[in-house]
Image (cartoon, rainbow, N blue to C red; front, side, top):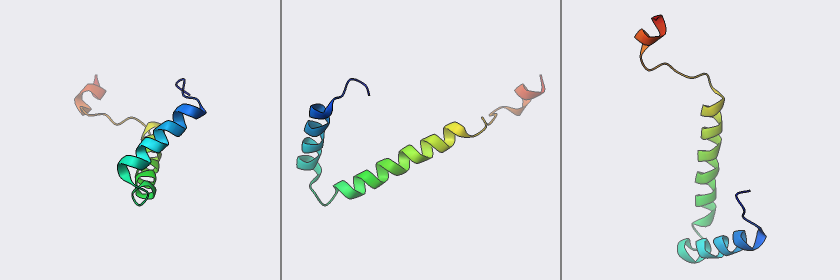
Length: 57
């Protein structure tokens, strides 16, 4: 996973805890999860054509 091991993830989590505080971490995790979920949903959908004239050619 991008070369991150358990020690690196723990350090990142501690830094986030110091910066955002314990009250904001659940909100931050929920918004991050929602963003990942919507990205996956958009990646699975059919691509939409921006220029319909290009489709006719």
